Length: 171
Image (cartoon, rainbow, N blue to C red; front, side, top):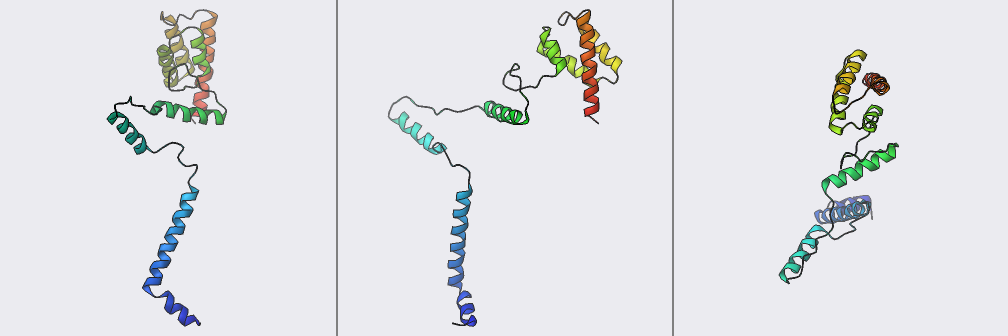
């Protein structure tokens, strides 16, 4: 068999079609193998059909266990936080929040979470150290906060340090 005979066979449309089908099947098989894991549970429609037959037979419907979107997001977020080496706080409900030193100080002194977030947003928006200290003093005068004396001085110091850290991180 010579090269011209081989080229004549390859140029036949039927041979080209067969080769294309074989290549597609091989590529599909390779792609199928590369998928990680596989399904551990039955597909969604199988669950639906099973539930429909239970309803038709008059049996109690068994609902498969599911996670809410919030639970899935929280689980992903926590795993990412742990890989980085941070420990998220679970005090605010479903959404994990990393607590800053100033927020922890306010929390330790019994300041409500909404008041803490308001004070922190004021500190973030401050343009100078004196503004930060004024915000802390103004918040300390409110009955919800009630910081006095050494606690007030400590709060001003921590807030100023945190403000400086935010300013240098923002550059």
